[in-house]
Amino acid sequence: MHLLPSSLFGRLVIVLLIGLLLAQLLSTLILFNDRQWQMSKIREKHFAQRMVKTVQVLDSLTDKEQREQLLAVLSTGRLRVALGTTDCVPDAAQSPIFASILTILHHRLGTERPLCIVEIEASPTRLAGLKTPLLPPFFAKIQLQDGHWVGFEHIHPTKKGIATPWRLLIILIVLLFTVLTLSLLAVRWLTRPLGILAEAAEHLGRDIHYSPLPENGPTEVRRAAHAFNTMQTRLTRYLEDRARILIAVSHDLKTPITRLRLRVEQLDDQHIRNSFLKDLDEMQSMTTATLDFMRGLENQEHIQLLDVGALLDSLQADYEDMGVSVTIKGDTPQPYPARPQSLKRCLVNLIDNAHKYGEQVTVTLRKQPEQLQIIITDEGPGIPEDALETVFEPFYRLERSRSRATGGTGLGLSIARNIARAHGGDIILHNRGGGGLEVILSLPNTC
Image 1 (tube, helix red, strand yellow):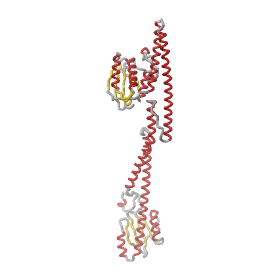
Image 2 (cartoon, rainbow, N blue to C red):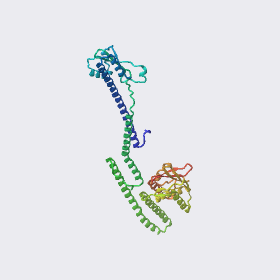
Image 3 (tube, rainbow, N blue to C red):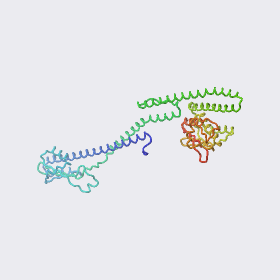
Image 4 (cartoon, rainbow, N blue to C red):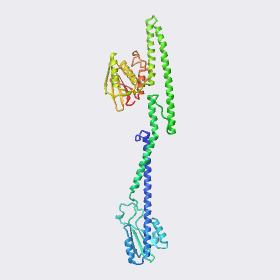
């Protein structure tokens, strides 16, 4: 199975190629065999007609000297003719190999004329390199009207390996090339809608508002495109409805939170007031983070060429103003097609997360043939191996390896991954061997 191409186009090409080659090979063998059989029959007919003409001419001549002169002219390298007096037994000429020759002789010379054909053995030199001949060497005798006999000796067998007809072979090659080319074009034409559907599904994963597929082409393609567009419309409606509900709830919560904050400020007990304010701050943070999370799912920002290196330099300067140490190193990437504000939010969330739990933050740029990698490392406690994927779930927070005292709502990594996947990339977490966490943000070269 590993020898087969991975794509449907490649597999169809292999099947068609093998089928066409086998069909062409069998057709060529059948055609060549039939041609050889026809050539053999033509030669048999030629020999028979030559013998008939010779007998008819000899019957018209009575002078022996004239006959000898004529025979010297009629003898060729393939068929020698000579006068003789010895007759032969007609019953000895019943071999089916010479049936067609006998039929022509009897038809043209009459069934009453004595004649016979017997197979003879050719010399080893003449038969060297030959397979079983279609027309073996033979010796024929036909009685003339005056009682004399004329002998015909055929000593060059007609072999099966008739010379290859190169013109016919070229025609077959051209035919094979033409059919194969048309088949490849047909396969490409038939499989192209699958590629378009796969590309549309990939874009849909990045942008739910991606342009719908054109509903044209064959019936099956139109039905698949229509089903895909219907699914996209339903997903868009579902996500928009969910986003509107969550945004409305998060927004409406701000008003009662503000009222509660004003009322808490009037409490006399300092300890109770601080406890309430802490809970209200956490609620406020959660509603703000939820709004940011839902805005990140919408991806309404347009794609622009962005200097990622310059973006990281500006973030480094901002963090230094806040007293946070961030080290930038690695390759200098080319301008990258991205959503600037979304990608900035993604990087800020990752750097903030690394600083909260690892203090020292290092950002490394690495250019790959097919993607740009931004690697963020810290020197914190890391994450348990079984939670490396779970931490991306919304509102999920670790309680042991990462203290809740550091704050956070559990949406930072979720927002960052959503933004990365909207760009066609992803975020993967690894625990470093020497301690700390390594976050790999992979972005494809084309967005």
